[in-house]
Image (tube, rainbow, N blue to C red):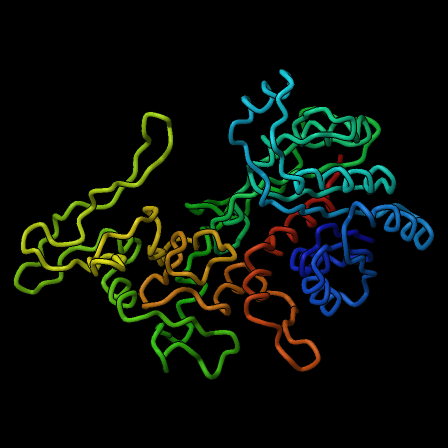
Length: 420
């Protein structure tokens, strides 16, 4: 069974295809460093590196002249940075009134992907993206404004059935909460307009005869050697990539005093003569315009004894005054041992990023831990090319932008065994 991978990045999602004996025979990716990793780990695939708008016809021609049957599946994971539902109604109204809103051109990458699908007619199509994709508007080839999902249905007509649904990858055994919009389409001559193709969850918050409990951070990474974001303590000599960036003394101070599941923004007094635990905590609320804004009166000094709280602060360059750091309420926040991890992004090694601190150790997650939490470690994948490991920044980006391969494996298992 053959697969085509569009917007393939470094080939992480394709690991789930390979696990079920589906060969990715063609891959298309814009970025050369990702394509190099893809080729290294999927040498059986013919790769097209560049703009899909320019390459789509070459992809179709190559497949048709090389293979006699349509692909079993096309996996398409277009870039999500431009996906947004903000002001969708206003944008549509303004467009109809002749006011031209500014659109992110990356959203229109769905058009060449659908063109490839129409030409090659795979048995199945898997679209994977952020939940906001379902409300995203694009300009089609006729310069009309249309919802991106409606565009897919319109272009594929009565040849495919299936509708989008939002899933949490933790429900499929991934030790991480990550909401994704999955659209699985099946080629058929008698489509049902209402059907949603999606495998049944294998895991849940509570176990039952049908599902296992979520895979937690405790079960996934608690057995690894401890690290700290201090020089000499931040690298494990026995496990490649189990290392973390250093934190300066003040950040270590904030992090060290942060309880599991809490943010350093809410840390309380540690003065042994006071230890007042009732200092106001940080928060946010919507203003009159509906914009969510963080509090501006969160105290940095103990409201009882006046001592500096172990809370994040900045220093005024002119006066030297310490000021409470402006930040979202999830910044400098520890994860919880008995929950799946929070969503891994390309910023997962930044302490100030959302909910990215280790549950108990004074640091962020290591790259090695992220490979486990994204389920990449379950598969045969290497970041070493010609005896040299690729830059850590590329590894972080690859992890943060990829779909967990275990989710793709679950989906592929579903479509292989599907019976109408």
